[in-house]
View 1: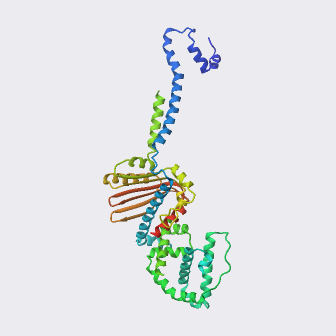
View 2: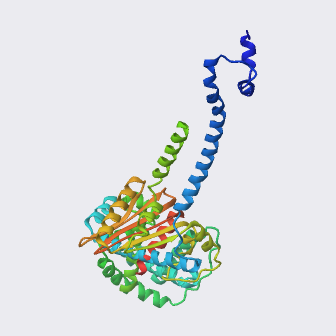
View 3: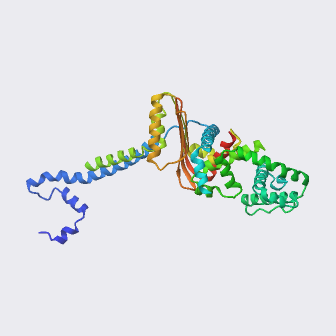
Length: 113
Length: 138
Length: 162
């Protein structure tokens, strides 16, 4: 009988070697379990490889989700942004003009003094 | 004079406008001023100094200034007060109030934001619009 | 094998969790018929940043210092009533779920325009403008690391010029 200490000293590698070693006789009804044990190591490697591929895939997916630039030329792009900002300023102007006449603004300002 | 001190047309125009507003707010005390031209000039100088200080804290202040055109300033001071009053009344009340807070009380936009609860953007636009309208009217 | 399924599921979930972004809004609508779409990427903004002296001035105000701090830019516009309504709702949902604060708004004769920002008192990380004027629904948004004071100052100056 092997002692507990000896068993504890066995590493996973040792165990796998032992499992693979067919010279050690095993009772017949236990034979069924052997294939399962070998798959565990392979199973883990597959899982690890899959995780890496999925990780790369996620990064790839992120890249694929990136929209396509509308402009190739930075000068054109800049002009488009400037134009949009002009439009936004127009909106600010209209909003401010409306607000200046409003009761709400007068109340807020008068509250102070 | 303002242009000489500030070396920038837009700033100079704003400074002169601020001067008018300040004079307008002091209108009740102006009768006591013995030399309105010099007084006006000094006020303008102080306005410019404040402006330069807020622009670049480490800048050297222009000490020398020529008191040119005193007759112009005197004339401008007395007549313009009436014009300023009329012009201010034409502003929407909210804008007028905000302009007052900014120019006469010298509040920063952050302070006005905190006191009124209006957004910084809104306040800035109202003040810019008010200044622009005054420029047109005066 | 179970672990694989779990990993796959987690990843799918995390990707759909990203669905709350200007980019996803853009991806959803940019290919639809009747939608005008403009997108400028961080890479393009880096190129813009390298332009030495930008001279184009659509207005009297120089926006270049602000533009140089942007990292993304989206426009979606449509006249199609059905797509417009859907876009309008989606944008509203988007600004409500993020930490967007209303900056300004204008409502008149059934026309609505609202502007929002996200960030803190010093910095704006995202700006959104949503407008519904007549038949047109438009969404303009830009992201970046923008100085709030600079943004307000420039927009206010340009607004006063109009």
